[in-house]
Length: 260
Image 1: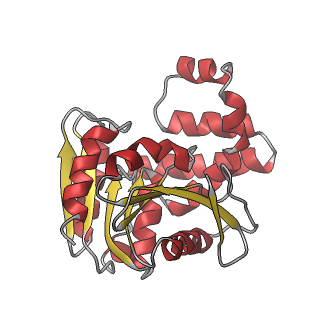
Image 2: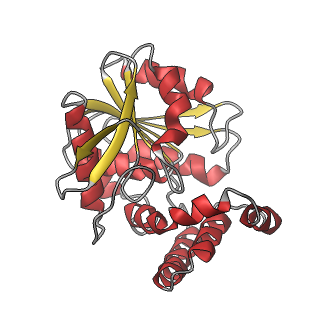
């Protein structure tokens, strides 16, 4: 990340942009930095100024306790101000929840798109999320960063053998470094349920996208988002999972953002 700005509470936020045109700010999900979305930014850069940034507590950005979701919204507001004062927003996974909160908070957002924001669509799913929150808080409070990462990977549905293999890999140290930010993503997701009342207050068009090869409940969550936002719409991408291919997603975002 080659640029730095200060958020309202003084936290240094790192970002970079590519391309020219209206600004599109891309918001990453859990265990990710802005660099994760760099391939998508490149795909969007022919039509837009595509902006990626490191959310607080990860990558080249700083952190200032105590954490609150409102501070992350302020971080996003600072990025938007730095790149022209208004922007389109895109968020993947829990980053989508942050995008929706930013839009509901009245930031200068023109349109917003989210991909597979993992809201629970059943009581069982909500209970699983609550148990994850409890165990994550305990692990991070005791400094067990590796255990916190394992908890998250299990929540995503990874097999135990894959998780243990990851723990022995060179990438594990980096994952433990940003493990505290898992609590931030958990906070952004609130209680894990679709915040229908909050979404109903969003005054800009929102596109909720999911892959047709992802689990049914992720598509149900995307549909629920679209139904809850007054100007919401829903779309599926053929053959895509939670690890969506940038070259498949980019044309959909270009078409949606080009409307406004």
